[in-house]
Image (cartoon, rainbow, N blue to C red; front, top):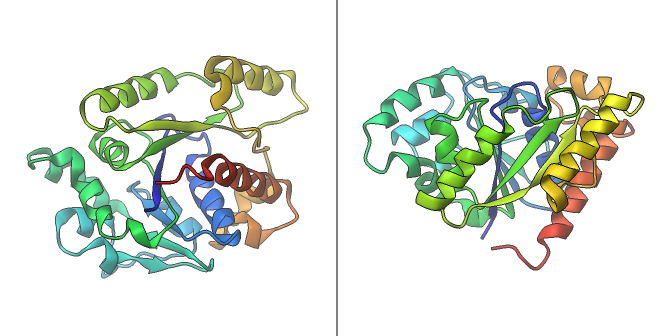
Length: 258
């Protein structure tokens, strides 16, 4: 059964979608069968993987609305062994529509139940908020991966996320775990960046991944070409860092996958 990992942080601009796209692609490049679920109405994970969502494209919205199954909405990407459940602005309406639904927090979990066995890993790219869509992702997930930018106020907002995770653990998804913390956008030339690394490691102790994602121009360019970094510029520091992160994640889960 594939492991479902929600990539979440309600603070914007921390590298959440960048991590969803590039970590999943690097995992697939290592032979893992991977699915990315784009649960952000901005649809950046979809465009970052080169998928153009059109009016007739079946998306996560149609899946949550019951108009199609998750299997019917699966889309191939340019990366072998990497599939996508795409999203666009239509998903913004799902939150309102789900509000009055019975078992509304479990809509995404039920939708993914029929396809998770096809994959080794399923990554859910969460929106930058703690609304119903993010709660759905946390209820569907086995664990949460938290990207944190190496900048001043790095931990700002993470307390709110951890509070939400704790509430979900107690009331909606008792099996939910913290997969780990990924440090992103590190400028190793500055004392501030190194101080943040130390601060986050102290706060989360053994949950911080060794692989740290650097601030890298090529990582910023890749989405405009619809390519993950390992295809856009495999020799870049960003590609090397996400490859290291993928290797580390697989190693952590060896023998422990569901």
